[in-house]
Structure formats: structure tokens, C-alpha cells
Length: 184
Image (cartoon, rainbow, N blue to C red; front, side, top):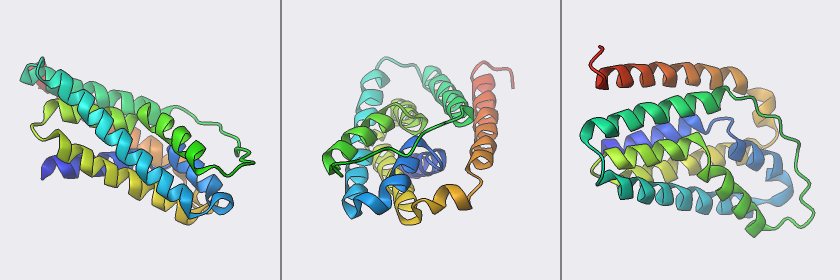
């Protein structure tokens, strides 16, 4: 059960103000509820793909290497959260749900939340529970973006929230990494 909860919480928190959530928020009013469905499918596919990739390397990892992979994933997630994002509102003349799915899937495969799913899946014995939690966390994040629409960026201090989360993830990465090395 903890694999499920870790996957859910990490993806939900790291996805707040992420590229995929902002894209859904910006297109929500113009594209309709099909966009949320496309996002849900993309979140599920990306979570299970990353869990499968994590499971593939799990057989080659020593337990301490799995913990170090978690520390590295947390560090990468912290860096992504700090990295400034400057995106224009996309022009979507066709309102294609399939195109939205492809773009959302591409953004999610390369984001910090899914890399955390990869690392957690390599480290835990239950990667599919991690993937299921991550899929629900990703869907919840996109649902918040879709329901708030353009108000998401206007009403929440997303930059400060992402910086605070980056600090928390950085501290967790340091504690885990130094613990694996026997320094704390």
C-alpha cells in the first residue's frame, strides 16, 4: 500500500504547476472534457511505462543502488521544479483530442514525476501499485488544471509552491543519498 501512496503523492505534488497541468488548464475551455480524458489516458500510460522500465532494471540493482536511484530521482525532480517554464498559450485550431494525448504523453514521459515512478518501481517490490498510484496522482493533477482552467495560474502562487517542493525534495535526496553512503 505504501508503494501506491508514494506514487500517488509524489506525482500529485510534483505535477502542481507542471507543463502538462498548465497545458490542460490553458486548453480546458477551448477543447472541452475530451481533453481531460486524453490526459487521464496519457497519465495512466506514462505511469505504467515508467513502472515497467523501472522493473526491468530492478533485477540488476543491489538494494543500496535502488535507494541511491531514489535519491537521484528526487534531485532531478527538485531541479525540474526550480527550472523556470515559459510557455505561450498554444494555438489549437483542430481541437484534436488525439493530438492532445500525444503532447501530454510526451510531456509526462520526460517529467520529474514519472522519473520518480521509474525509481520507485525499481526499488519497490510492487511496481504496479506505484504505477497505479502515480496514474491517479497524475489524473488528479490534470483534473485540477482542467477544472480551474486559466484561473490556475492566476489564483495560485505556482512558482513559490514549486520552489518550496523543490527544497523539500532536495533535502529528502540529501538525506537518502547521504544515508546510503553511511554519512548520516
